[in-house]
Image (cartoon, rainbow, N blue to C red; front, side):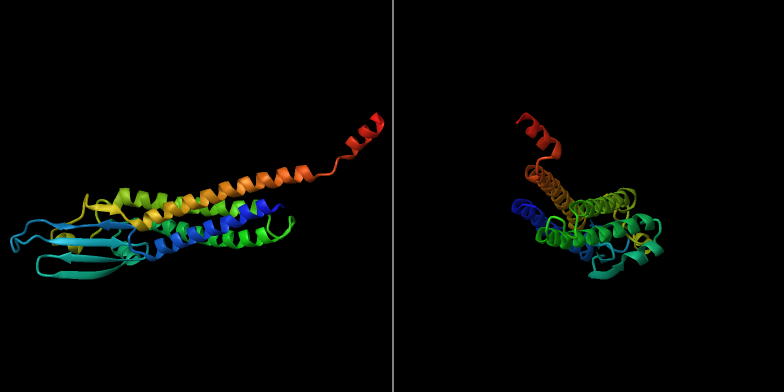
Length: 229
């Protein structure tokens, strides 16, 4: 394997690290969906009410101000799903979390494999096809994650991110929610992994071309050359 091919393979290590950072940021931040709830007119207050809700995959926060001060409430997304089943779908949430988690695992495996393959001989312990497959599996699981969350948002979260108790106090969030930067981190990570796949496919092409150039002449070609001589 030529130095150029090894360099191409090693470059995917940095891509995998970038993807890992994006996925870790996505999993640990609470901005998969953001909303600015409002409160309808009521008989006991005339002041303008404000609110802000941020949901991550696992935790979030809710800040509601009825005009008498902010009321900050931490949110556990799993508990929210269990207590407010009409507001989120458990299976869509689960596949989003699993997709992002397996995508992170695939990126970690790809990063390690890229280092080993670029430093090993042509017939090293890591096959280039396996390295490509690990990147593809990471990309696929991430696609599953953001598709499931997008469906979750369209079907549920854009209509409501509040509890029944909040709605009884005239709070509403329909049409006031949007996808947050944590969600877009997964999309960016997927694009980085797709670039990695393109680099690896090109490296594979270069490796095959180099092997063909270095292949010794076949016996049939030698025999034909001798006969002509």
